[in-house]
Amino acid sequence: MRRIVPRTRSPLRVVAIALLVASIPTVSPSEAEGQEARRRWDRMNQMRREKFDLVLPEVMRENGIDMWITVRKEGLDDPLTADFGEGYVNPVGYYIFTDRGGDRIERAALGVSGRLLSANGAYDIVDGSFDLREFVAERDPQRIGLNMGENIGAADGLSYTSYHMLVETLGEPFVSRFVSAEKLVSDFRARRVASEIAGFAEAGEISRELAERALSNEVITPGKTALEDVAWWLMDRLLERGLGSSFGFPSIYITGPDGIEATSNERIIQGGDVMMIDWGVCHLNFCTDMKRVAYVMRSGETEAMASVQNAFDRAMAAREVSRRAIRPGITARENMDRIGEALTAAGFNPIPFNQPTDGPQTDVTWEGHHSVGNLGHGIGPSIALWNPRRVTFDVVPSNLLSIELFAYTAIPEWGGAKLRIPLEDDAVVTPRGAEWVYPANSRLLLIKSEPTDRIVS
Image 1 (cartoon, helix red, strand yellow):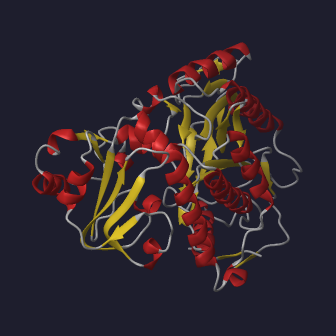
Image 2 (cartoon, rainbow, N blue to C red):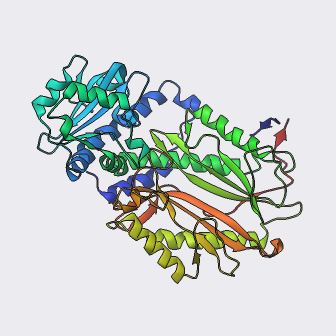
Image 3 (cartoon, rainbow, N blue to C red):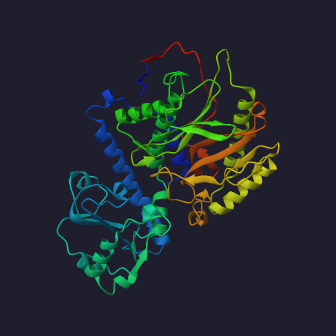
């Protein structure tokens, strides 16, 4: 391996804060010493309190659930643990939300303890000594939501043994009142308060900054740097900043006449390559999903090959058509149809994924505008065919979407074979449609073949 050495939940208010966050400087490790952990904790607490105040009553009542129980065991966290607040559990704990009327939901953490939970200000009850059946019986809920999700992994956190523990502990009549909380979990996560949009936008800006640095001569020396070197450089930057990766090892790949040639391996980057990065950053319980595209100039070139630039420009035009077609208040499936019709009207050829035609039009795979947020592939409404359940959900203001498409345009120098240009950036749904939460891809990145500002050892 060669070592690289580089040098009130108003949608309008939500968007305003998201746009403002672009001006927030990224805190460096040295500046953050002694305060960054507390800063992140404070921000997470604000998100949690606002989410419980503004979103929780709405989604519990829409889904007809009177009590929502999430179970944690020592060594076995539910996927929503970070959403609810981490704490010590030994051997079992519960986050219980009960609709007791009024304008808020009662929040209880039973058997979950620790300073980070007790001081976060989100819970009415934090109790290590409790009788679960007595607690539930006093509230007498008619529908008890449990995290059982046939279609959504993050809503399926209740283990087999935990389910049977609830059955034995609560007994009848409560067992007969158990229902799946799958749709509730999706709605709770996918509807955002302003502080969440601001936090997600910060994660997006970090993703963008690092991706664009990675596909530059700061990191790459054509003829010497391997694809995996770029991926490891990114992993080191995440380690330095205390961040996570949305999808593990970043995908750094080369696309040629026959499709993807190599991904994050020992393949050496050369002049004439068309490079892509597909990755995301995890920060403040959010994970982004985005792409960037670069052209590696050959010796003597000062710009991208004209046909490659044209392919990129066509993809950008298709992305704008797609983004403008998205509307709130209708299902993801209806939005998918709107986008397909808009692309056709604009002269593009909508196609199934990775099935380009031999025709002269630019082909576009558009059925991938998926939910994003707490995971790189989120669990809210998705304009994506791989989410058959969530394509039926309504798209509403404050949902986060990854606007993802693939455009295929013929390259004469490749004998007419089509170059696949992938574009992906993250947006928030507003009453006006979909709006970017950080600066979206706007240019084909260029990498010089004869850099003078790099040291490789």
